[in-house]
Length: 213
Image (cartoon, rainbow, N blue to C red):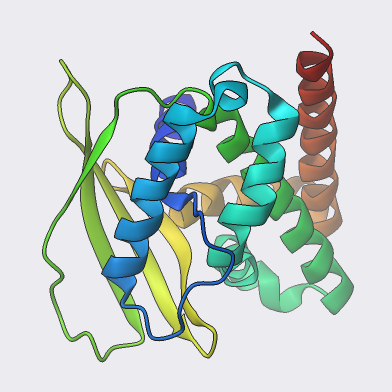
């Protein structure tokens, strides 16, 4: 699990950072991912604050540039599985917010680690008229083996949005689904929300300590 999270934070961040506030509604899913992928590489390599580990700067960039392209509610509902339908609207909102915050801290912690990674994209397969597609790529780095990195996107009225990431054959949603089920089994939906909230408070405190250095 720790290895998966480390790979996810480093690799997914490479491809999720965008320099545009709003993507074109008619932009193809592979074009969208390719565009924002190049922009994250350029920004992470050129921004001295990011390279220096300035967490405030990184968090601001993630909030503005990454989040508009991720459907966190759909991602959270899939990770919660059947328990999502049992949750109240208030619990669903709280769970989505906490999961969103967790992923924000996760991605933020990885941006400053970007150095010489490069992305190679594979040709799209299937019917582009579908409203649910997978964009396949691999991350390369000098002296290292290529690492599979795929994205699952869905077509919404506002354009394509990412709702799952696959690193080395493991989907993010499926990985968290087991963790969520275990936490819910111990303390219910509220127990899971509290666990995520406590984790986010720890990450927030760590971010503040790093910013003060």
